Amino acid sequence: MSRIDFIDLKAQRRRLGTRIEQAMARVVDHSGFILGPEVTELEKRLSAFCGARHTVTCANGTDALELVLMAEKIGPGDAVFVPAFTFVATAEVIPGTGATPYFVDVNEDDFCISPSSLEQAIAGAKAKGLKPRMVIPVDLFGQPADYDALLDIASKHDLVVLSDAAQSFGAELHGRKTGTFGKYTTTSFFPAKPLGCYGDGGAVFTDDDAQADLLRSLRFHGKGQDKYDNVRLGMNSRLDTLQAAILLEKLDIFADEIVARMRIAQRYNDLLRQTFSVPQLRQGATSVWAQYTLLLENRDAIAKACATEKIPTAIYYPIPLHLQQGYKQYPVVGNGLPVSEKLAQKVISLPMHPYLDEATQDRIVATILAVAK
Ligand SMILES: *Cc1c(COP(=O)(O)O)cnc(C)c1O
Image (spheres, rainbow, N blue to C red):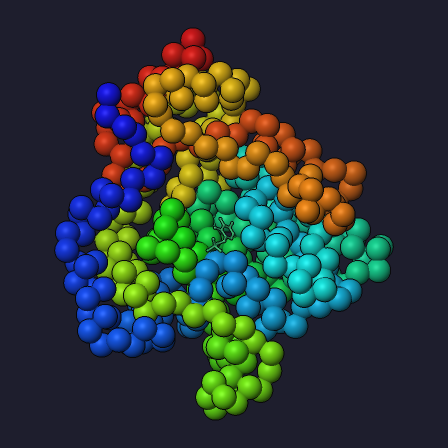
């Protein structure tokens, strides 16, 4: 039995042949390792790809979130609303600013932040004397959150919308790509993300000219005219030129990879729909399928059967953030977050990447259907 990869980065590398090595060799030759020409080129290409006016690359997706909080001067007394069912980075960046992360529940059908729970959280924050300032919807597993409803709520309450698109870069809502739904969008180029580099990387997208300039200063020690002119507090968070060069090669095949991801997810849906609760896309939304995630009553039995067959599975996420040791002290909407807590008990993600062949997919499907019988 051949080994199955949860995410097969080697298949992508085989497809790209020597292009990545050549791109890296060019950088080593010109030696512009920090903010070299490939970084500028990548920022232009990413803006063209997603339709945002500005792309500001940075060292990782977590820094991208933090840079936006700094650019918006989020601080003590402010409430920043985040879903509890997400990767920790979404909330992690908030306490350092002095602001309060406020945990909101998610929808069971799309795994993304629930608009009605957000409205309840805004009222709750006000009652606690906090100032509602920002919401960070997460496009979990690759599908854009419900921005139609979320943008309405945000404008009613004067909240800045920061879209955490670490898992959804390339996905669409009503024909527009992630990158332009909120005032800011961030993404991550961590290797396992849909568009990943060979290390850490991230980006902020915005249509706001002044804020884009501010973000460029913040990522480079708060520079003014140059790096020895420090007009504000900043940080050191740049995307390495080597990573930009790698991403430029990968971006060339990204649209084609998204099509493959959609085909593979559709095939999973067709084969599993009769037996399991398969992932749902909202009207007008596409997904880049960072994860293919099922909601199961008998998760443990299926995880065990897969392990026996050497099929890797993963649980994103086993503990919602409001129940994590490091985050228990922060407020949650109402008395708890029942959907986040339920999902943490029932989700399981199957191998998903653009190079998953039908025979392998059939083996995965047969294994989990055998448990269900
Ligand atoms: C991966 C991820 C991040 C953080 O990205 P890094 O590049 O690893 O710092 C943030 N939010 C979500 C939802 C993620 O999945």
